[in-house]
Image (tube, rainbow, N blue to C red; front, side, top):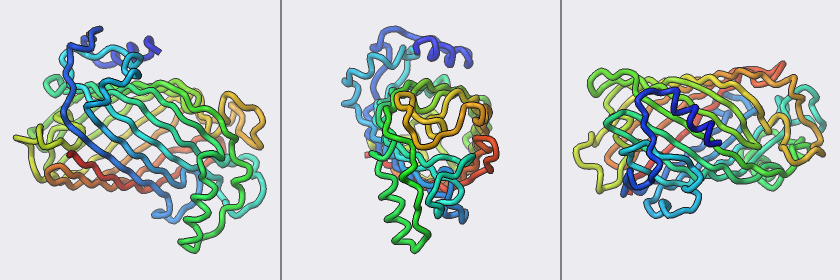
Length: 323
């Protein structure tokens, strides 16, 4: 895992890693970030069909023992420490079928937490995020009841295949993600490059991408999107902007398609030969912010993830608050 982190860092020049954690300071910002995603806005109900995240950033999390295994910190960084919860659900093309759809995506869902540290360098326009993933996938995630109840409220077709979902299994992994500004035009436009990798029982991949931001905005590396009252001085109070993001990944393992690593009794999974090893994702975002609050709406599209699959798209809404 340490070698994986060093590899990601080497993709971006000018990074000097310090072995001592006291070479950086912890930000006083307290932040909360929530997202909700669903594909119903595009009149579809398959593949990635719903998801939520909730992230909390607190200075007190700097004392977590997990930080000891999150790798070295680039010298002179401002550190943010957080916990981010993930819930996602996946289904095949037709949820009305009460049988296994061979060749289609398996039913799958998970809950897991990222215990993460973000090392941010506004002067160098660089950010390194490392995280330990820990949680579970399978029926224990409650996706069958959640989607059934949601469809009942919306008067939509009842999903009938969740009894064939991928069984309970462990989610355990490590990931690193580096971002670097490539170009800026005043305070109204910036281009950011990224590289990242994940090694774990849920997802194993390596990827790279780019993000273009334009509009009335604060520089990307000034903060994590919003700031707390103590660090908000001198920043633009009103933000109105658009973002376009493109990411490509080389896929090593995807447990939502292939099943977890600890169980071999899943009702149905896809073989490794059916997995697409290259996947592209594009995201278009509109954002509005005022002081310590930011709202975002995004449209996401992903290329086929397995043989015979379709491209898929969904909408995500997010809110960030600094307090």
